[in-house]
Image (cartoon, rainbow, N blue to C red):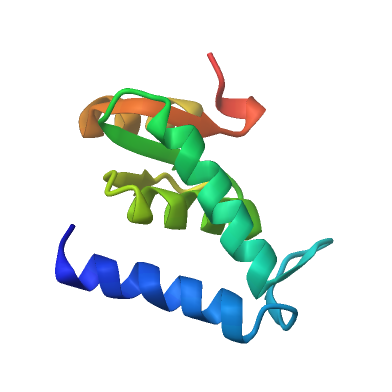
Length: 112
């Protein structure tokens, strides 16, 4: 694992330990402590490890869920492409095809 990535992983772990119950992320309707962020990221990283390696494409609303998946991809050393939610269905499909995504997480409006 590259040195910078290992430092980042350690920083996440340290924040979870040192600031555990402090507010770290706030979405429209949800709030997450540092411990909860850490748990959410590691849960998703574990889920990613169950899939073949490759690019992860995220076509999700900007919020905690997108953040957790993006961080999970980072700590899993998986390339990640974030597709803007204002893209049309055709643009989303084009972006996914061009980046060679092996796994796509998207809002239901773009499925299919």
